Amino acid sequence: MSSTANRPVIVLVRPQLGENIGKAARAMLNFGLTDLRLVAPRDGWPNPDAGPSAAGADGVLAEAQVFPTLAEAVADCEHIYATTVRKRGVTKPVLTPEQAARDIATQPGRHAILFGPERSGLETEDVAVARAIITVPINPEFASLNLAQAVILCAYEWSKHQSLAQPTVEEELPPAPQEELDGLIEHFTQLLEPRGYFLPAGRAVANALNLRNILTKPRWNHLEVRTMRGVLTTLARKPYRD
Image 1 (cartoon, one colour):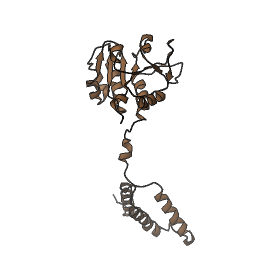
Image 2: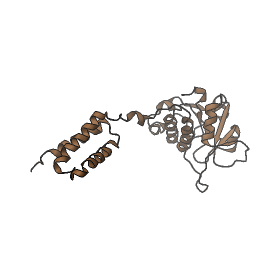
Image 3: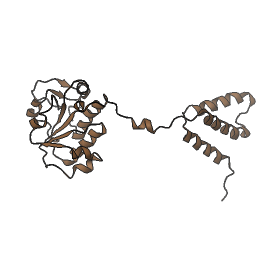
Image 4: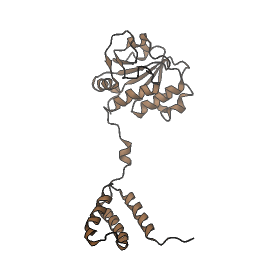
């Protein structure tokens, strides 16, 4: 993972609800971001509503820094991005989250991404502090993202430039060895042969090949093979009688 300097600081400007701060912290930690800064939160800080919504991202909340002004919150940052979907009459470069993430990953210095209050977003004065604007194509008739959604868009794009693990890959079991798969196919054959599955004789080879192709296609792991063998063993038993 990149150095701390290339992990963007997430700055929530005048956030209103503790619940939304917690959700933003959760979105950050999902993608490896931990530096949260709050500018004049409406209900003060700490906020008891933030913890439950963070769903385990308590460390992000515990380390969150609070500043009275935006200028103080970003005083140590060389690159500042303002997230907004509205034109503010301010001439600045306009980037997508993907483009901004590329800049953050490659340009030295500390980067900060600003997010405005839930109800109104960043004010013109807030945007003026930034060096660039981040925006996304959005339905002009409903140009409203909640705070956590906006944070997760930017955090996800940044994470694509990092080496974050894919947990689902580690949970997959390796394919079963050929010996186990052959045993499964033989088990099917032993049960099907007495019941005439491979008749007429002229179709025996083709039927056996089709059966093998079907059973080798799913990429069985050893637990799946064992489960199927258990199914076949159960089917081979005499039915229980009440």
